[in-house]
Length: 288
Image (cartoon, rainbow, N blue to C red):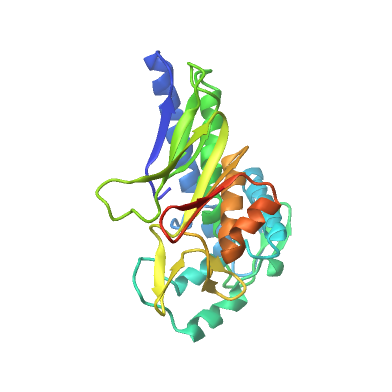
């Protein structure tokens, strides 16, 4: 998952808690192995190597592709799982190296879900195109891990993969889980600082932002979220967007859609009735 993963089990019984931990870990590893773009032995690699030939996928992969298509439609093409190919040009390592514009433009013909043929269960990409589930994979893993935990115990469980999290319900004493929103402007301090505290009784939270993955292009700090229509990092995006939703997959989708809206992130979330917390410069500007 490229981040710390944890599960919290509010229980007085050690054995069920250990069983939940093992199940959550197994789920995380399974999804990492199946959908990571960094592997050459999974379904994503097989699709990306197909060179224009159709690839038949399993039901789980088909559901993710359906969700990705839905997000693409909702966002008018801004959420696009074929845009990962642009990372051949962009390196979001906090440096100030912007790629040659010609190099970025050369990749644009390989971007665009509208160029993909998706007819269950067969997916066909143009030669050179790729898919990348990075925008929804970790959040999907959280939901799957929580479901696996719920099959083992009725004790309250919270799954947290790199700050994207979900809970089965309130804690045993009836209280909500207390979640800190990291201060996006305080990452250079010795320990993380909280910009605010949320109480999560059930459901999920996801966060997206430029806290750790960004580039300083032409003197401007730009997030790792790329606009598939231009091949450029989004302009005017918040430092951080946190969204609450019924599932982590949905919360993650809305986070990404908000980041893609740039300066209009808050307007989108308010228009859609999505509960959210946004951090922008200057420090301390957290809107609801």
